[in-house]
Image 1: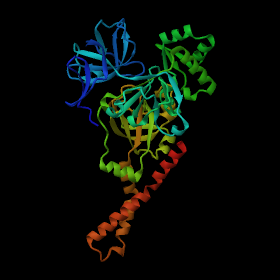
Image 2: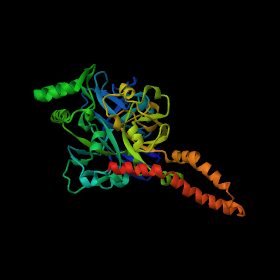
Image 3: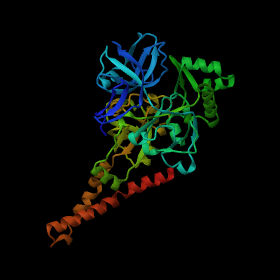
Image 4: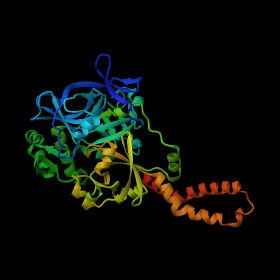
Length: 450
């Protein structure tokens, strides 16, 4: 999918409008303010976020995600904005990555905009008949109906944990039985979104919790978090906690900070749809697809300069992968190819905050940049590279077998074209049979998962 034709430009009334080419346009953004880019670039946050911006305190902007637009060229980026005590009024401090992304220079004017989104405060478990799918259920009137035909991708985001999940429009079901503010998710989707347990709490959040919670509720936070320089960090992932301890912690966090999910369209997917090449469809048919959503995390330290990602052995078996096989990573409308190796728990834990390895994939920083991931709290789609596995199977199994067939006297007396036709037909049959193990393994794992 191409995103170079997508821009945010003003209409005749001066309002920011999403445009694709000359004809397609949509008014889905509201301007929150105009700012001048500061001379000094901002550093990254403590959690490694690079899509970060700071504005002067007292502007009235609540911390959160905004769409930052360079009005001069229409380029835009998704940024997390916070108030800073050292910023001048009317100025905004951007990281160098965001400045390069929107091609903004110090002194340029940029806009902060909010896109139209739906908010959900009541998270329900997915119904039994739909739990085997990757679908989510939302009320019918949560977003305009035409959004689901105009945008191919949507982002489901937890403002408290800042974890995000990318969904295709066809995986979002409108359910008339749901009330306003309700949403249905599977247990895995809730885990990918952090189960509403933030990995870090700021000092202000900690003091707010101490003032509002009962002694018993605040004790649950004290037992789960350790103090650090700029706040408090989760001691272990929520998925590793005993059930009673996790539920007590979730209850305390819900009482103090609430629970909310936000669904919004991915602007770069406006009127775009990914189309697979014919050869990819061919290899998908013979090898069989296998896809898994995993949270993006730091890799082993030795992998930072290589195109290698790390997954648990269970997830590799689930996808029918072996060491140094290739996988396709997808995020929004971008993709890249890497080799995969099994994860070593000790080396993984040494580089990452508290998280579940079963729901994680270690991705080097340069690979994250190729995908447009500027934080460590986004989920990516991991798909085995069927073209690589197809070629690997030919090299290991089919070529020796075909050479043996060609040496038989069966082809004596046949013309060249007759021999070629027979060999081609037999090759297709043998390829399908040789790769049946990978297909059946995936289907078996998928059936067990359902």
